[in-house]
Image 1 (tube, rainbow, N blue to C red):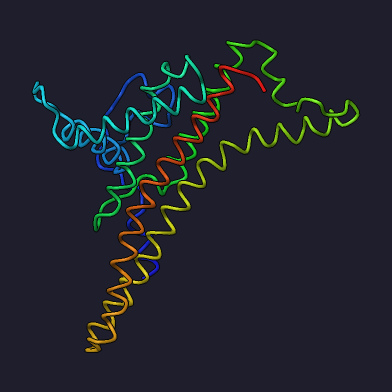
Image 2 (cartoon, rainbow, N blue to C red; image 1 turned 120 degrees about the horizontal axis):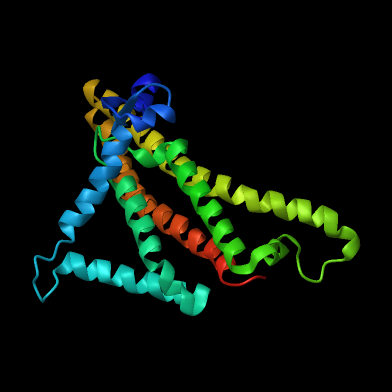
Amino acid sequence: MVAAYFDQFNIIPIFSIWVYFLSFWINGEFFCFTNTFFMMSFAVFLFYTITKNNNTLVPNRILVGFELIFAHFYTVLKDNLGDKGGNYLAFVLSLFILILFGNGLGLFPYVFTPTVHMVITLGLSFAIIVGTTLAGLITFRFNFFSILMPQGAPLALAPLLTIIETLSYISRAISLGVRLAANISSGHLLFSIIASFAWKMFNSGILIGSFVPFAILIFVTILEMAVAIIQAYVFTLLTIVYLRDTVELH
């Protein structure tokens, strides 16, 4: 059962194409398309499909829901980043929708979940931290490094505090990606264990006993839906907090 569970998270190459200029950057001359690439692309395509308005003046219920999400993140950005928050609205919304649909697609049976892979989540988190760092350096120049020294701290403790704050700043990228992957994968593992137990009891003829794990399975499914939404929101909200360093120093 353990092998069967982890098999659904294997990155499988679908097909490869020969790309001349990529042969200088990667080993070999073929660019491989994997199930991760297709699931992330499908998430984007699915979002475009369900939010397509077809030039109608009155939005449907789905579009109204996304408009509420749009308004909420716009308010959060304005509260945290001020007038410059609107500049990051497209990025924040795209990030939230991508993670939300990536988490949500994994709730369907036999569907690959891209957000359980550290390569995906850490790639996103490191890109965000590197991007915010570069944006901060462009805005504040070398004054940006003042965030590594707490205000009002004794000068004698400056070397120690600088090291601690630097490690804390770097750990943002690790914690941001690991949190998302760990929460999504642990939920899938719990779901798999309970489903396997319920199915074995059902096959053994213990119908009354199998009712309890099946009832728990329904609860876990609802919980997983909530976790998929919450983790996407937490990831995006922390990104907004980190983006604050690009507009003001503390």
